[in-house]
Length: 253
Image (cartoon, rainbow, N blue to C red; front, side, top):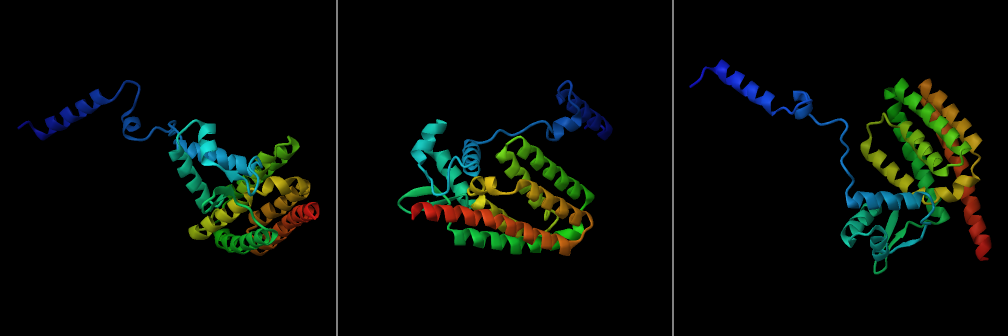
């Protein structure tokens, strides 16, 4: 039997020989930081349909026919079916027995309830998060608000919606209440199909100014002021929603 030192040297030499040129041992043993796993067919379809819903291409109540979607994306119905199950779990769409899937359609009362629940649960999250808020989180909120301003000026409502959602989720990012976060995420998803309808009715300069006040409250770690501002901010978003349903009611009368 060779001496242990010789055996170790032999193993080391073998490892060196196995290491491809241009790569360190750490790079071989660890994961590459520049590698991005490609999306599965299911993930790609779910992402595309989610985009169609949140941009208004698929309006609330629109039917999603699996055969048509499979033909549109040029793939079998299996990944389509799995993608639809994902979107159903996220509450973007609803399954209707014997009929299929449709984009979640809500009544005015449903939407008011969604916003009310968001207000209650986000207050709990903000209160839980505030002791752990960092300056980095505050800076990210400020960046999101600036992105909203830029997107609004560029006439890009999709980017406005994305930055707005990121802004609000940052307000309770530091919370450890994971289950409540999941519920809040579902509530945001449920109402997302209506965002393209009421976003043009919002006073965006006022929205961004309210965000600035919320950033100030976060920077000062003033939880009571932050909660109050969040309540007022949410209440202002309800007025356009009422306007949408009033217009639909008048049109059908």
